[in-house]
Length: 129
Image (cartoon, rainbow, N blue to C red; front, side, top):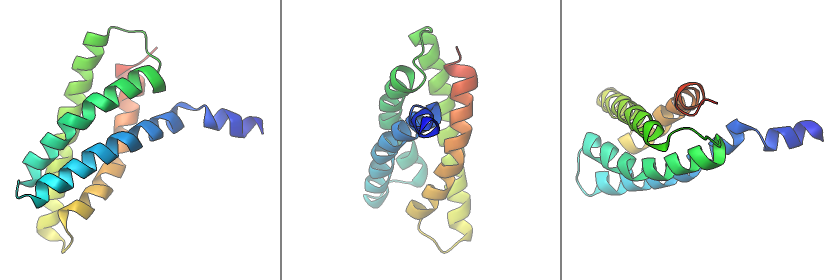
């Protein structure tokens, strides 16, 4: 029972819940914008811009409970979002040109990989204790 309690309080589980909420915002907006005719890259950046504010607040306060400078952390977080969004957009573009799968589905796989990369960067660099 103690292991279950520890797991439920773990940072990675909280991060997963935060990411899930942010993913719904990001993925929903990406699909909407893409199906409205915007390019993959424009849809990616626009959706990420909206979801990143939600994600930053949830991660800073609820996941990592950081006491550091909000302005500095937000600047670092935005840099991570730009890098992550670019990787996501380029990977989805690359894969969609080579695979007979809709970009909306390809984005799921790409985002799973980025989930773990972003967790490590936030834990070790942005919201470190």
